[in-house]
Image (cartoon, rainbow, N blue to C red; front, side, top):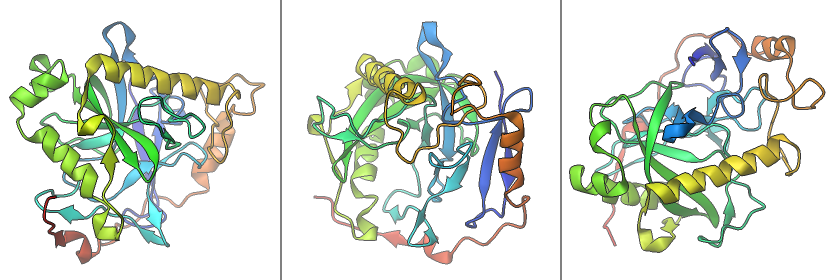
Length: 291
């Protein structure tokens, strides 16, 4: 199963969008139409890469927009970039989401005591290759971190691209600790402090900041897939989320998006234009004492 992307608008501007197509060239939603599993029997999941490693632009699947293209997050009318909190340059993994998952804001998690963050579940891919924005890769899940972000549960799945040369040696979170010493500690440090330059408090974590193992992580992903199934079958409240899709919902569903409607939605955006410059402030470094 292969997917392609189509850029619209000007990169590094408010107009930029990245739309997805399937192998037949049909526009699809990366939130709803890309299957959760690449190989269910082996627990291999699809991952949509939103942010390539070492970059700063906070790109994400636009859950409230028709066809859910990837776009840059906006705060107070300005494009959002994550700060470089020493020693971390931008995102320290390929960052993205598992499709057909949803952290339900109406569900209070038994482990964290907090409700979901209303997004697909996040993934940190720790392989050696720097992926491209919009790339759909097959990943092996290794573990999960339970971050509490402003009172919401925000799971961070740790995974590796199955095509990575190291994938055969990494089968659980303990293998990451052994073969990539310091990476998991850096991951906790990154998530704890990445909002501090914006004047926000440090984030905290459930389970005493410990990563849970592969089996636990897979169960968390499966539960978020069940929440998504409730969303798409209209048994859960979608709120402002856009659940229209071109491949999953049947014709009589209000969530069924026709080929013509999908084409029209893309056509309403500007064609891909000249790249805007990234503000020089994005290169600034921030230094804090570790507590």
